[in-house]
Amino acid sequence: MTGYFVSGALTALLFCGVARWWMQALLNKEKLKLDDAKGYYLVSCFVVGFLVSAGFFFLGQQVGYDQQADTSQAMGLAVLLDAMTALLCLIWGLVTLHEPEQY
Image (cartoon, rainbow, N blue to C red; front, side):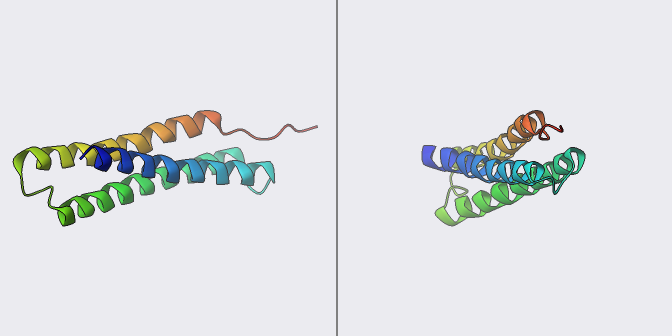
């Protein structure tokens, strides 16, 4: 069950980190403005949070975590942890995205 918690949070962290890295790369190439990149990053973190939570909920049902009372509650907490991880990555990304210096 611990692996279920950790793998879901790490998956959300990885996907949100990749989205942030990609937005920063587009900003550095000046293909996006900062406001547009932050908006796209916001949407991508919401989508990642939803998809990772839904995917790990489905995985928990396939494994059988929803059949017992204690693992059923833990499965719900794991889904919330996945969504919270995506939202924390959203905060981190919105604060750290920046445009390159203009000379």
